Image (cartoon, rainbow, N blue to C red; front, side, top):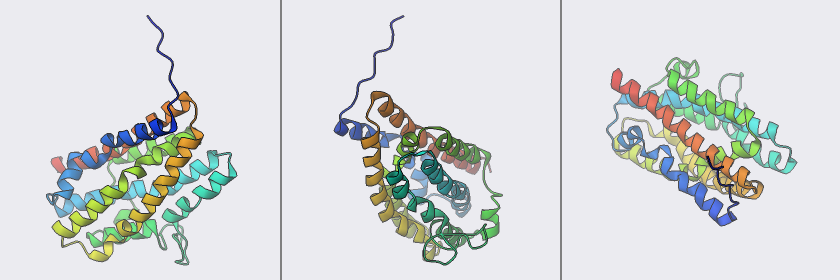
Length: 247
């Protein structure tokens, strides 16, 4: 049996193109998202999506802290730190945060709870995660473990779903305003805030991956990490979609 061909180092431009090419595996093509954006989801299905997505949102600050903990470069740690506070926040309302250790004060998680309220969920039933499906929990826990255990460059590469998310969030915002007028408009703040942040973050994230993944092995691992993250997101929707079909 012949040995596998050695990996070749990609040029910076070719590497960037390969990473962007994985957009075909992003969850915007999932049947649930297609139905969601076409206005064909019931209120209960939207509430299920919001409640389950909370579990993912809650993991993001931990995921970003894991990247910082595993990274030996002070300049990268400093640059990445705002991604922790964007989601966790602070109790004084100047950034994001938790005033009592369990509830966000302002920012990412607080905005997600506002979205939950806008679709008819109470804070208690979201925060206590009673609606989180086992498939969603398994997928998100797997993603967090990946970021804790793998080299920081791979965890950063996995975050490159940011390359694809702003357009999806823009489409979602427009679709929800068009098809689901029962959702309170003030609950859409998360998407309105996150879209420009994601556009800025994705450029910085891509530059980090292109700069620090310079060997063929590192590039291959980065591509695999981004594909894995796309699988995580699709697995979450698989669980939500299956639950909707069997309820």
